[in-house]
Image 1 (tube, helix red, strand yellow):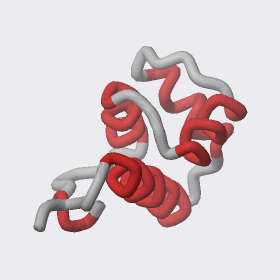
Image 2: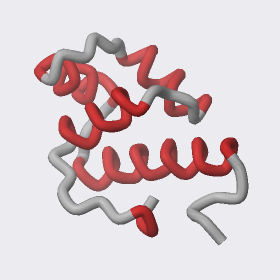
Image 3: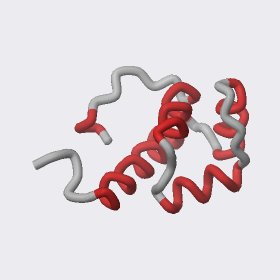
Image 4: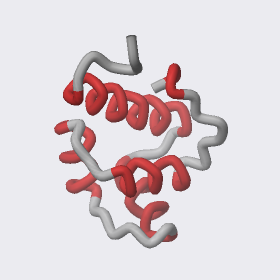
Length: 79
């Protein structure tokens, strides 16, 4: 069995993971937008909220969030 049974499940796992890491770091959607700007990604609080609610976003957004939240050593099992 892989990390997820299907694409929708994987999308929701990635979204939940980012939300949990934001909460753990005490980072709001507004703060994340500011941090993403420093990494060259132009997002608004509303666009981040929509992406995480939908659960669908580009890998560049996910990796930008990982960098903005300063996450190290992400294991697929943690997602």
